[in-house]
Length: 107
Image 1 (tube, one colour):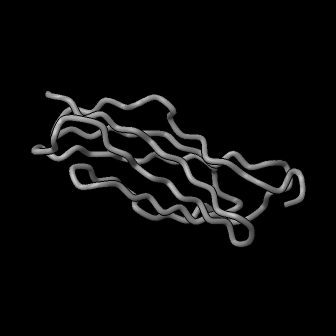
Image 2 (tube, one colour; image 1 turned 90 degrees about the horizontal axis):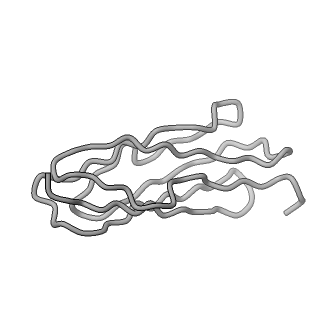
């Protein structure tokens, strides 16, 4: 890849705490290098006990690079740590990914 033509995902690095049955909005962003002008498809996955919205979105080169994920812990989710995986795939070049850790706690 040519310098200045890549991107990364900016996501929370500390574990998020969500009560059982509650939801939280989480900001993520594509950090584009100076010459990166591609659409990027995001695929967001998690494990049973959590849900996330959206699960897939395309961030166009002309769009704002910031978006909100809404992560919800099921009312019967077991207490503990879960992972939300964000995979970003550009039109050309290598994909990148980020992991968001979510800790489900008692309300």
